[in-house]
Length: 427
Picture 1 (cartoon, rainbow, N blue to C red):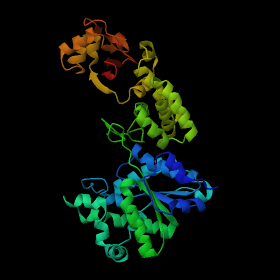
Picture 2 (picture 1 turned 30 degrees about the vertical axis):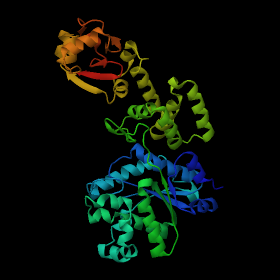
Picture 3 (picture 1 turned 120 degrees about the vertical axis):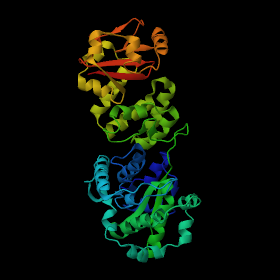
Picture 4 (picture 1 turned 180 degrees about the vertical axis):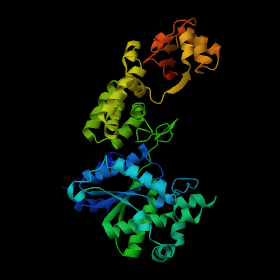
């Protein structure tokens, strides 16, 4: 039975634009639909999770999801939503990125479930043998320059200039849709709202060149309630690859979301039902300081992107970092667990001979590690109870740091204020 894909997206707040006739088509038969992914990095970021979740809901509604990894278009660039041209990539780097992204996509979509099994395609496969003369003859003649100039992604760039390469991008993406419509029976392209113009160019090409009909659907671009860009932190992008963003940092991103953002995120990034989400919101409203909404969101998405073991380790790390950890608990951690818990925390190295001799804490946090910019500031913070060593408050500026403070014979943990941690490695 075909579920109502559009209704599912509507209550989740995941529809921006939809071409007339799209919902009727999806109600009456299984449809093949695709979304394009940009292979300019060797990992997807959490911003890419929006189209991934669209494809997942699409498959759960009984339709066939196709992920197009742009091995060809990644060499060109896309002006949509950008103010400058993207650096061109070369084939070796692109192939590596495409292979890495494929592995990530396979974690979310079912590639072996019969007629609506997911597929991954690479547009390099059909563009690699397509000459420029063939392209302008077989594709370019069907779309007028006036049509292309009317697109917002082009108009917004004309004042400062744009290359022919990026100007022609919408034709290249339009041909992707045409190719998949003709060869893979794809009738629907989906994407972010900044892609609407390019997607519609594809439906127009299908109509003019193929005499066929195709459809389009886009999601809103996510913005955080405070106006800052979704998917980025002060340290950069939040990636799905744990070697780029540790499971702990990934978990913390969702856990630290505002109440308002969490209501948006839990609809888009989880598979919870409407009833489950509304129940969670009601429970959260009674005791907002417990952050039940954020915890449910962070748990669900961390387990699906990484694993339950990674989620459990992230929770353990959070407890150590945010108040429940003790000096004894730290000492019990294995070296591997210690490094896992404090992955991403700023590090300093000091010589073992300094520890053997014993160091005044003020010298330790200024001259040896630069945790504080000045001794005066360090003394003031220590006297105010704002500095801890291995989860134990430094009681006096007379305190000495020595061998007895070493964790696993080589680490010391310093905390400045409530949230600033530093790992000192003794070498």
